[in-house]
Image 1 (cartoon, rainbow, N blue to C red):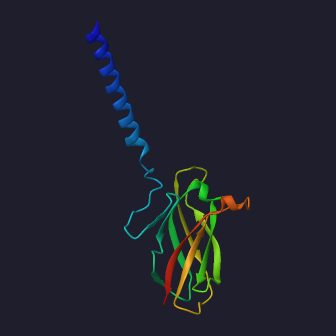
Image 2 (image 1 turned 90 degrees about the vertical axis):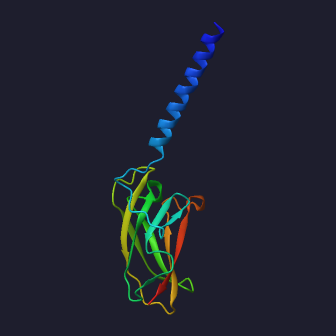
Image 3 (image 1 turned 180 degrees about the vertical axis):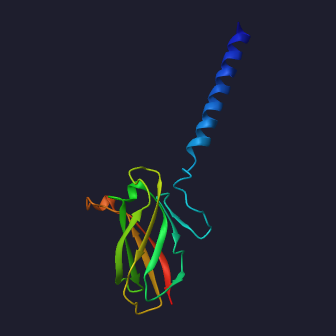
Length: 153
């Protein structure tokens, strides 16, 4: 009787381990349809948005436009887009515009985005690009953004 209980407990432990292993293997992956190439130059922010282009401190043309791309969680978008700004080193907004989701954005998964932002010529050689979480509510608690440093040439 005692051996039978031990075998049942060991069997249950093995089942739990197998179920947890299978769940970990399948839940830890990004859907291959929404995954873009991973490079060491990409910038991942809080597991919410990954910026593939431009990379940190990349040289971009001072006459614009700048192409941006990456992946963002569906809740970073609203109506399949979110705003991006190009700033000079003084924080002056040189240009702004939306980037578009390249798939179904009504998800918590990563969704690719691309966009092209026109901007006016900067005064200096450095600046930044701000990727803002779209916040139609206007509530400060829902604001979020990430900044990438750039160099103008």
